[in-house]
Image 1 (tube, rainbow, N blue to C red):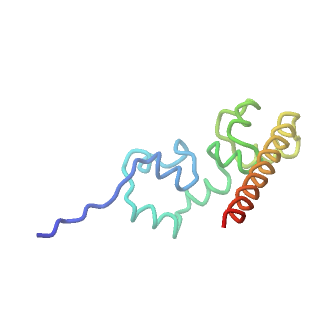
Image 2 (image 1 turned 135 degrees about the horizontal axis):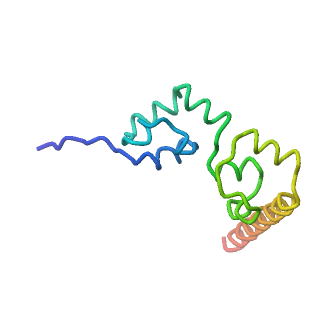
Length: 130
């Protein structure tokens, strides 16, 4: 007895997150339906014009904004950025570089440096244990 396989589906919010786009900026039919794994793979392999446009110009979700600015999502919130931003708005922030952005970039650099130090420490401990 073989069971029929059902297509794996996901909510539009999950699919938008995997595609790196802001859900509210996607077309209505994308927001209202479910997305199968096959459809998601097709969108990634051959993105339609709306997806290319969203990825290029935004509005971008907070994780993408944070990555483009080189800060954490929490850093964005501390800086007062709580909404999605367009590429143009992100470029303006980079150009103007407000004090909060400079501070949050320094914080993020410190976090990354500490992560590397801990990773190296664990690697050295693992080598000694062998």
